[in-house]
Length: 608
Image 1 (cartoon, helix red, strand yellow):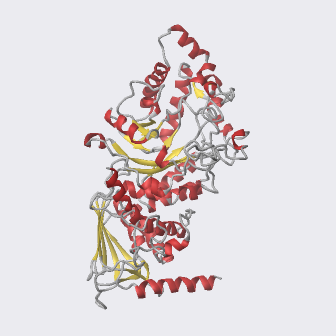
Image 2 (cartoon, helix red, strand yellow):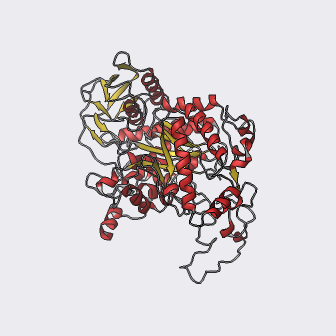
Image 3 (cartoon, one colour):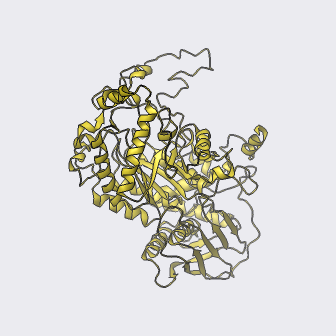
């Protein structure tokens, strides 16, 4: 079987490079801001490219180059999905190639003007990559180490097998590239289900290959506390098991792994909501409603949006002592300048179980839940700021929910997940910097059905609305228990114009986007297939956008690029899910819904 596979691979390569000698098969993702191919013919690549860099170059760059070099030498990648016009299914033509004059590529020369720039928000990630017809050198320039790393990941996708055991770059090429947004990432949730360090690193590999730079690590939640704490060692009694704990050493190892690949790790501890496990081991009195039934089977009486309930009590002075110590310890472990402190889904019903809160309301009938949340903001934020010099990030609920505080400091970044462009507009109008994570477009856990048990809504044998197709039943055409259904496809993600309708000044407040993958139904066995390759659609959206030079949506153009990238992820050990039957990879655009290749921009224009 192995011999047959190798024979098939060689035949594929021979087909690409014999019948397509004048075409460019590679299609790197994310698409560079500017990429110009020559037409003089393929340039062979030496089996060992000599790495040359500015004297005293950071070891991080050399290590990154070694990984890139090992990848294309070991992988000898053959593009799995190539672009072609729908009418003929032949590759796009290029000018006739010249033969036999191009010298073999033997060196890579990297010039970095500021090699000491740290990996932090807003760092310059631009690069250029040039391979000329006559040169033997791959020239890379960048302002920082982090731009050079992106150049390497691009090079990994354009250095491919020559079909004879060697390597080549199909044509001379010139690339000038930089990201649209400084914040581009995904969120991993290790509170609902434990994710092993190796699988977290696998997500980091996917981020690096797709030029994303943020791993938002939602460390804990009401269900479990898997994070070792020196200050309060008993908190990990609420880990799922002694084997499912992130020690300081494990966390630092993940951070170092990410940093070496140009990925920042932003921690999150959700407060005051989604709080039970861990905290109750410190002092149960700082929590409310932990012993309540979460839903009471009557929504107006619920204490949590999902089991198990629990919220930190804003009116207990001990609460602020505990969160201060927890925050200080974790801020010392995570070096990134951003720290996420939650603030979402604070439930009124939970605080009916707090005598401190009910007495506080009784003392002054004019007080509202907005005042209670404001009390939290006014007392918690100074505690955070006293313990560490970090930029705080919160979920938008802290400000714009029905219970939100009216005065949230403008230097806090708000992560928007509700109501799409409407909430983004309101937050940026009010002067907040915003991370876009709109659930209707970017939540990767949506569309897999509900997960709570003992749910009689599934016990329906016949569609009660069968005669009226305009009505969706829970089980027939409905969400099936997934609150944010339907499933968010790569096209749904990529087509999201999240700055539409914003003024130029408001748009400046959008610092980027992240795709959350909440883990109620996620663990090691499925995390990569639920994350990838859909997250790569967001990678390109936030790196170079979803429109071509004429301002028209290029979703159809992305099709073969993301199908190929999925195969590339799998080849690099990332368990990305298939998006289409393999037939579609091998027959460009044969699986399109519309034969008209400009249907998406045409329909947009018609609706404008």
